[in-house]
Length: 111
Image 1 (spheres, rainbow, N blue to C red):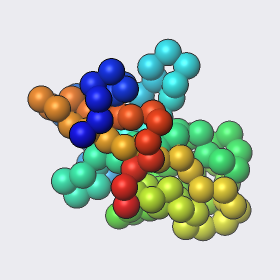
Image 2: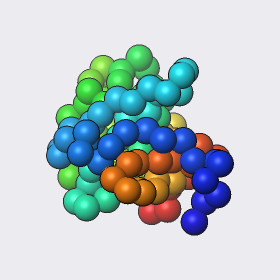
Image 3: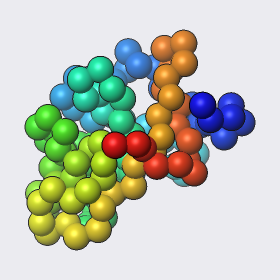
Image 4: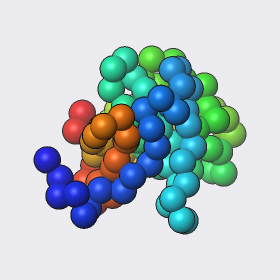
């Protein structure tokens, strides 16, 4: 478990829609939160290829398609799933406590 002082609170679990992304901004830190099955996943919201926002992309299982050039990423691992994207998206370690989602900004998600 991550020390509490390294965790950034994002939102309530009830705020995250199924099969869609949720943009969460804390100061200048902007991420996309997803619910994949019974797991919550958090990635950078800004696509690595262009100005698209992944929180606004189409979700199909574990894959999110960017709304700009239609490249895609695996939400759990951050790996590129379709071009034109070439650089993986950053993932974050997620902890759920008392119905709230927290991330460790220094630790990637575990696949």
